[in-house]
Image (cartoon, rainbow, N blue to C red; front, side, top):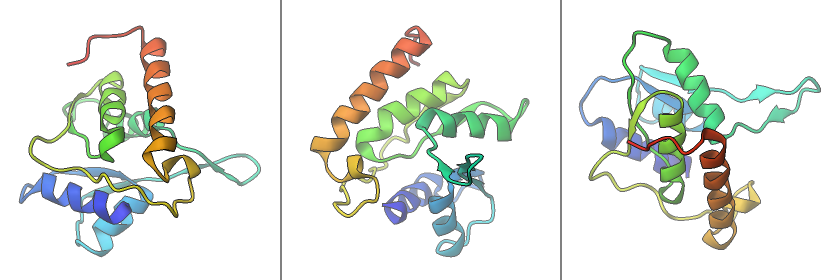
Length: 147
């Protein structure tokens, strides 16, 4: 999956020199396989006991907003698994970006039955989780207008 997402990022960038903010696993592929130099890795956080903290979609958007800082511009292209793209784009919008899914770029859509996250092994498990996440996101944001 990370390879497929990295490929979508490369296709989205085309030949343009724009920074990429990507979760660690995708950032590593972009750097090692594609040689991209302007990749900012969104690394997981650790709990006080040393275990990894799950990084939510909104959490990723929050970290990108913090790393970009003010005055950088707020337009963002969002690359995500096809069934997750709406929530990823909306979460990015909620964090203050003019966020868009790139037109004409197919997003990865094949589930990994061997995924370490059981809810991402197939659509019958993933879609209910994503729809619940969408509802919670809309409820928590008071349904702001989606651009």
